[in-house]
Image (tube, rainbow, N blue to C red):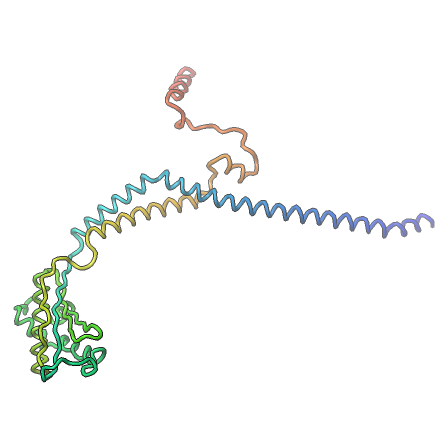
Length: 285
């Protein structure tokens, strides 16, 4: 009976000791886990900086491929700009609008910002104007109304009484003729049909000397940048997708074991050592 009483009396004390030990173990494990997480975070930050540095040196080691690709793309872009792109020239003729009494039209009278722009844009969409231009330049068998319409653009700069009639064509001479012919046809149409004073010619179209759009130099510059950027992106993708260890530090980090020795490649050895190794191998054979 005494032994049973002692067991019952000591049992709560024993369980309390076990609980204290368990709490101490849990706290130690939590501290260890916290310290391990902090070390892993620090290691990841270091790895990011090391990876960026390694990426830079990787691109630097492949710089000859970047230069070769940039030069090839520059040549291809130059050839394309020279033989694959048709240059287009733009010539612009300008008309000045006056009223029937010969007094200059005010902005409020003709509402240049809205009504006048729409009215005179429709003049150049009229088939009668296209027909006059075709007859003047003898283009009956060469261009249709829709084709001519695609070559012409008319603008009314805000706050002005000017009409800009622009014509685009691969031949600069034809671009100038089209712009002047449309200006003359519009003058006649506005005077005869719209019963307004014939617009004055503000400035005739001149012969354009430079084509529109990008020149060969810009094409070549874009080719150089595009070729270099393409190879750099490929090198970066290969570097980021390559998870193989390349250095002793990579092996230590991935496997968690220290590197005991490193065997250099034969190709990195001096030529004199290579000859000695080959001579010994020949003697053994």
